[in-house]
Image (cartoon, rainbow, N blue to C red; front, side):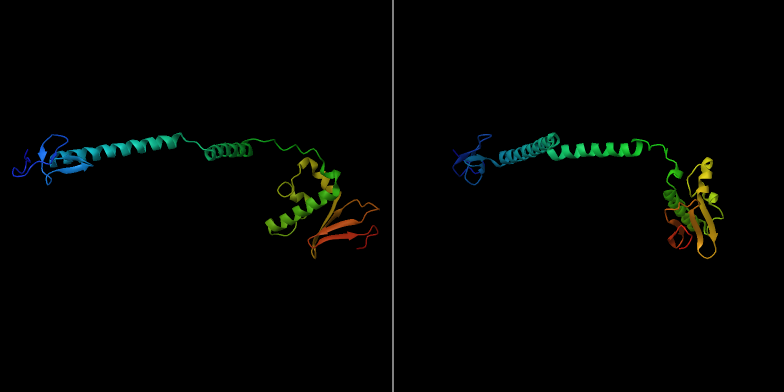
Length: 197
């Protein structure tokens, strides 16, 4: 049998698709020991390329589906910690217990109340920029948070505006067995029961 394209040459191979006789020069080896004519070789290579692209797309889609389905321990940890953090912020912002109502009387611990009034005097001088107040009642309610009904508790203190030191604050009633505490902008001074420093 002769080659279809070259009538002077004998056919050595046959096209695997259309069965056309081909010489060694016209035969295209697409796979090992599988020969095609030029047109069939082009068609099979194009169709193989298209199927390869489709296979790649299918594999990529399967890979995405596998990735979407896979939830490892890190994602579980991330989800649970995120929920926990959101709950904590909710409790901080919107929940929690209300602070207990203040039932203690400030007059029950006069020395602690003395230091609280002293810090209020210093805040007054810092923010008002006009020195210290004439009387302790000027501190209420902005600098000293006590009810106006409890203003008589300020009578526990002896307050005097001093041009040299700024002010002198002490307890009005002195106990004989303790040293008297006198507060001023310079600090704390202790006086003996007799009145000396």
